[in-house]
Every structure is written in structure tokens, then in C-alpha cells.
Image 1 (cartoon, protein in one colour):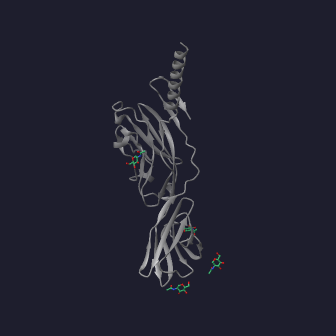
Image 2 (cartoon, rainbow, N blue to C red):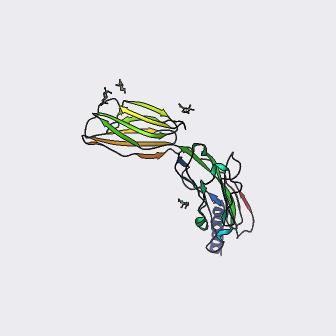
Image 3 (cartoon, rainbow, N blue to C red):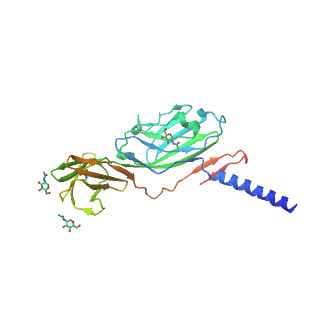
Length: 266
Ligand SMILES: *[C@@H]1O[C@H](CO)[C@@H](O)[C@H](O)[C@H]1NC(C)=O
Ligand SMILES: *[C@@H]1O[C@H](CO)[C@@H](O)[C@H](O)[C@H]1NC(C)=O
Ligand SMILES: *[C@@H]1O[C@H](CO)[C@@H](O)[C@H](O)[C@H]1NC(C)=O
Ligand SMILES: *[C@@H]1O[C@H](CO)[C@@H](O)[C@H](O)[C@H]1NC(C)=O
């Protein structure tokens, strides 16, 4: 009898904890690291929601609205199986879309084309479906970054990057990581984007590797360049500097079938 009570109470605790963790998962969230857009290129803002089980819910019952804090109108709206763009902010005309074919799998990500500096900001993805509704905030940061190209004149090594924003810092190191002196010049175009030209002050040795590092608050590029008498071979690797994580704000209404009640999770 006592053993039975233990088993039954253990089962109840298990069921309760499963139900509890289940209702803790927000209906809508944003996967992965915050997005960093590169001026002129496309960027994707992640938004996913919990789809109901297979066959439980027709995809055309899902509506998705993307908005940007501080701007009137919507960035993009999808409802009744079509884009609803009557109140789209003109800034996003022909530049925003979602992927309707991915809605049944819970993917409501936004594709924003030809990113501009002024696109940076806080976006909101709101999803409404028969299985629930919710909103998540997604931060878009915008930078400009481009790979380095190297030129060798006699033994002077120069590196040039066409587009950087915000204004970056530039440093060089030798194959052992020791810092090297270099000149740096920044040319600012009409859009405020910088072209960077930097030349090592010491003459380089052939068959040696020199690394140029360019970085700002958002992006770091590392470009090792190997110098031979025939020329320079180089590659550029980009990494994105993760800012302190944005406090996610979830306002979620869920109607779990097993409880038949509404929950407000924050
Ligand atoms: C959502 O779809 C986009 C476009 O196909 C894809 O790049 C992205 O990885 C998907 N996100 C998730 C969470 O599945
Ligand atoms: C190489 O650099 C030195 C010193 O910075 C300079 O005097 C010389 O003219 C440069 N040579 C070329 C070909 O640019
Ligand atoms: C290079 O930097 C070192 C310190 O790191 C300095 O002592 C030296 O004067 C610099 N040389 C030139 C040519 O600027
Ligand atoms: C870059 O150029 C823009 C427009 O010409 C100007 O408004 C801005 O002040 C410049 N910025 C810097 C850091 O020189």
C-alpha cells in the first residue's frame, strides 16, 4: 500500500512538472544570436512558434505581423493566406517577406532585403494561430563590413577594405602574434561608410604571414596574408560581436488543451 502511494505520488509529481515545463516554453520565440545586417545585403530576423500537431491546424489559419518599434504601419503582415500590405510602412516596400510554406513548421522568420543603416532597431514578431498567440522582440543591428584586399609594392604591404561602419579600429600582427606598426587612413563616403587603407610601416619578408585585424562594436574581421615573391594570398574571416543578450519580452497567451484555461506568461 505504501509502495503504491509512493508510485502514485511520484507519477503525479512527474505529470505536474511536465505540464509546468510545457507551459513555460513561450509560444513564440527567436532562435540563435541577434541579427547583424550588412548594408546593401539581405538579413533574416528569426521568429518561430510552436505549431500544433500534424493535421491539427490548417496553415491558412495562421497570421503573422512584423512591426518595428518607433515606426507607424507594419513591416509585413500575412493573414488569410496572403500578404496584407495596405498599412505597410513605405520604407519596407518590396523589401520584406516571410516564407508562407514554412508556417506549418512554425517558422515565421522575416527576410529583409537590401538592409540600410536606418533599419537598425527593435522588431516585433506577432503570431496568432488556433493553438495560441504571442509576440517576441528581435533586435536588428546594422553594420557595414567587407573583406580586405592586399597589394604588395616592393616589400610594402597594403590592405584595403571598401566598406566599414561604424568606424573600425585597425591592427596588424606577425606570425607569432606580435603587434606591428602600420599607417591607417579612413575615407568617409556620402552615406557615412568608411573605406579603410592601411600599410605596414616595416618592409615585409617573403614567405612570411602577416595578419590584419579590423573591428568595431559589431563585427571583427581577421585576414591572414601570406607574402611570397609571386604575390599575396589572403582570406578574411568575419565574426560577430555578441552584445549582452536582449531581455526577451514574451507576452504569450496559451490555451493548453489539458487545462482548458488561459495563462499569461511574462
Ligand atoms: C526559417 O526559414 C528560413 C528561410 O528558409 C531559414 O533560413 C531559417 O533557418 C528557418 N529558421 C528556423 C528556426 O527553422
Ligand atoms: C615603401 O615604404 C617606404 C617607407 O614607408 C617608402 O619610402 C617607399 O617609397 C615605399 N615603396 C613603395 C614602392 O611604395
Ligand atoms: C613601432 O612601435 C613601437 C612600439 O610598439 C615604437 O617604439 C616604434 O617607435 C614604432 N616604430 C615606428 C616606425 O613607428
Ligand atoms: C562622414 O560623411 C558624412 C556625410 O558626408 C558626414 O555627415 C559625417 O560627419 C562624416 N563622418 C565622419 C566621421 O567624418
